[in-house]
Length: 117
Image 1: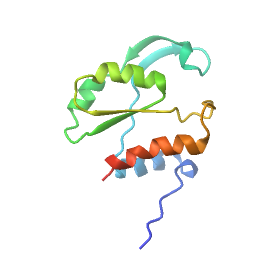
Image 2: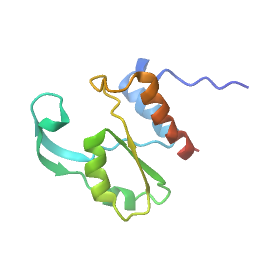
Image 3: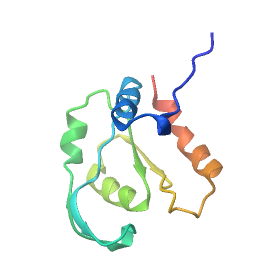
């Protein structure tokens, strides 16, 4: 039997969230609020961190936290140090991240399959 996975980018946002949640994936931003002009992470100022430790503590089956990009990883690793969770740094999925080709990004992101049910 072949199970066809939906093409997530083509789905409406609410359906994308529903689809990934059904797979045991959650999305959370490491930044609760900030100021930024433009789209570069280097332009982020006045960062208020999201309560990642509280979130992680409320999810007893949580195994891993993956960070989408270097800024996210730096902030998230600082918050979650010592929790025992698998912390995974991933390249930014943003199209503005031209340092890696899509295929290279995909290969790095596929490590998450090891944590899916």
